[in-house]
Image 1 (cartoon, rainbow, N blue to C red):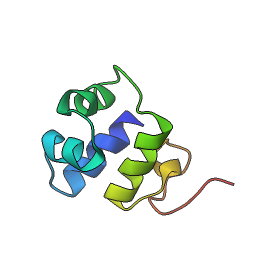
Image 2 (spheres, one colour; image 1 turned 90 degrees about the vertical axis):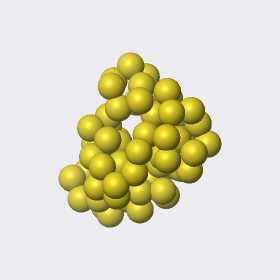
Image 3 (tube, one colour; image 1 turned 120 degrees about the horizontal axis):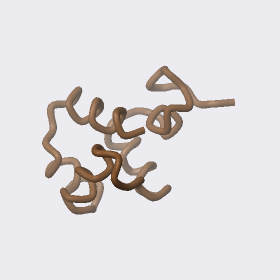
Image 4 (spheres, one colour; image 1 turned 180 degrees about the vertical axis):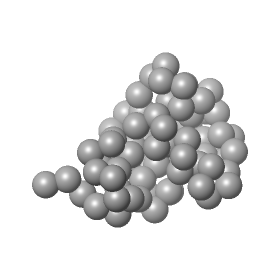
Length: 71
């Protein structure tokens, strides 16, 4: 999951701070998600997926396609 958050952030050309503002968390929280220190809550996974235009399943490494869902 961590790599997908960072890769999506980089893909759309946003900073950690910009993602944090969009999701409603601190930049430190996003940095911790990207560095494997913590996991985002379910609510924040959904917010991230909406922001990045991908599925939550993709962020959770359940599928390889950005728009696919598991099951």
